[in-house]
Length: 272
Ligand code: A3P
Image 1 (cartoon, rainbow, N blue to C red):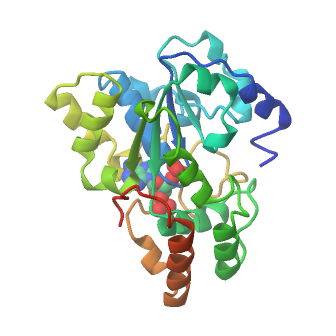
Image 2 (cartoon, rainbow, N blue to C red):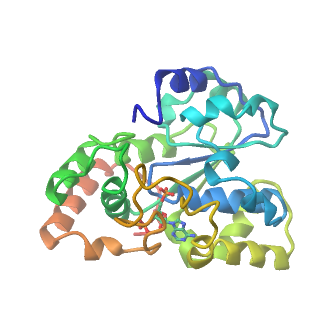
Image 3 (cartoon, helix red, strand yellow):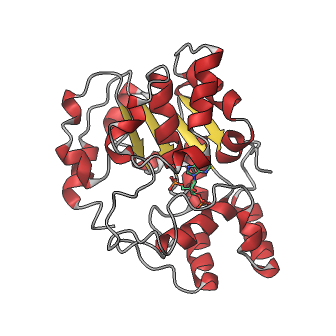
């Protein structure tokens, strides 16, 4: 999107210098980015509510490829810094491959990603309108949408070198067992949390609670840019909403394309 990603922003990211203790959230859009932007700061701060109440999610764990990154003075931030990106593995800048900061890669059932995107794209002024569902479905499967193909994104990150610095987790796992997810992410980030703190973080990150956090629910974004009366950013927060969205024929077609594009992937997805 030219609105979010002017050439200066892309150049900035291309030249960005990572630190070894940076933490990076990587997602294909609509896979649980905002959710992880809540969970990670809470984990890194040992459960301090201020970590998600003082800054908006886009400033707290900023997208490195977006225009706001240019004005946030990220070079001056104390370590460990936290960032977000929607970039494909193959598009990561040179410093990323040299420094190998820790990555948490969140993925979600692509039929739910599609469903979430369909509603979200229709509510923003800076993204190409999804158009009729059947057309948007074809565009999504062809990767003719912002950040390209879901299949390429997921395959690229699953095939990354240096896998010991990447943690893979799914939206569905976060949903199914929030406490266990917090525990595992904390372990990966080498933060020790006691049970009480782990429970508090998991509770704070529940959909209904996050929805109340004005620093995370996008209520600060003007209606002309994001019209939440059309579709709320924190819309449903469930797994399997594609069943309410796709026709039977569309779902079958999606599965056929999925089977073909993912045939060489060994990873056992938790949404299966
Ligand atoms: P839905 O549109 O299916 O509700 P992203 O942040 O990557 O853009 O993803 C947005 C999706 O994550 C939306 O999905 C949103 O509701 C969901 N989401 C955000 N926070 C969540 C939470 N705490 N629990 C469950 N889902 C959440």
